[in-house]
Amino acid sequence: MPELPEVEVVRRGLERWVAGRAVATVEVHHPRAVRRHLEGTDHFVAALTGRTLTAAHRRGKYLWLPLAEPDGTPAGQALVGHLGMSGQLLVEKPAKPDETHLRARVTFTDGGRELRFVDQRTFGGLAVEEADGDDIPPRLAHIAIDPLDGSFDADAFSAALRRRRTEVKRALLDQTLIGGVGNIYADESLWRARLHGTRPTDRLTRAQVADLLEGVRDVLTESLEQGGTSFDSLYVDVNGRSGYFSRHLAVYGQVDRPCPRCGTPIVRESFMNRSSYSCPRCQPSPRTRRTSAEPRARRS
Ligand SMILES: [Zn+2]
Image 1: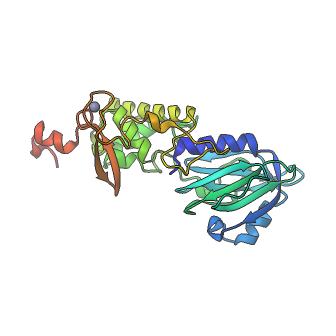
Image 2 (image 1 turned 90 degrees about the horizontal axis):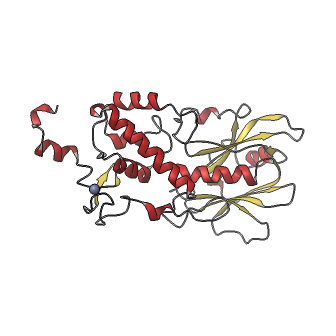
Image 3 (image 1 turned 30 degrees about the vertical axis):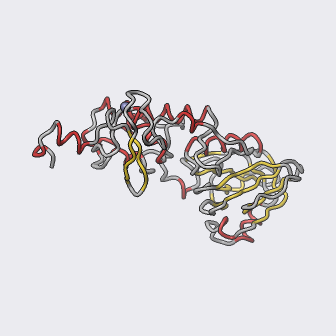
């Protein structure tokens, strides 16, 4: 599943290869790929054709590309995309054979490389939505700004996290609190901060929250520099290259391998119907701490 750094890699690819080009034709090969365009497939095609994709922006895992009319005036709309579980946005030469799971194709008036939306499981999708200039489309505005965004407010995040009465991993995965942190980066960040995912947020110290945020930033930034993470063969960047950050994971998917910090075998636990990976020594669970170190009566 593409996570935030992968989507940022795709955004940069779109900015480089697609921004500034005028759409010649649009083909939709599967109606599910445009199901969020409520007016239907024909309307989607008409809304894109003849317009220019002026830039590529991102909020969380959503991408949006503002549209301009042929005379250059803003169209008041943007192409919005989400990669879902398995989506890819590929920039390909027109002669390249179609991918098996090609869902939509956009060609450009310059006759150069075309944009293809490929999605095996079709949880992702494209839509044209209202958007004012480069502003975020209203449907996406509730998504929290992520730590890779220059306007991310670390103090506000820390205060909001410590006000929550929840488990810290649940908070990291809450897209209204912090954008774009999925299961893999949550586990890696928690390991860096030496926190078990079920630790209660309202009991974290300021220093622990600061360590956690630093962990999130570092793991996202390192992944971005390396071109995104490839956990299944489905993710490739906008030009079809796989990321390779997976080689550098400390805990995610590393069950029974030694913790890179202390050598203790990494364990896998079930959390929110998914797997969580942690070092039982560096990241003791609150349950372990309670039975071994803290009297139960102190916990409500
Ligand atoms: Zn360890």
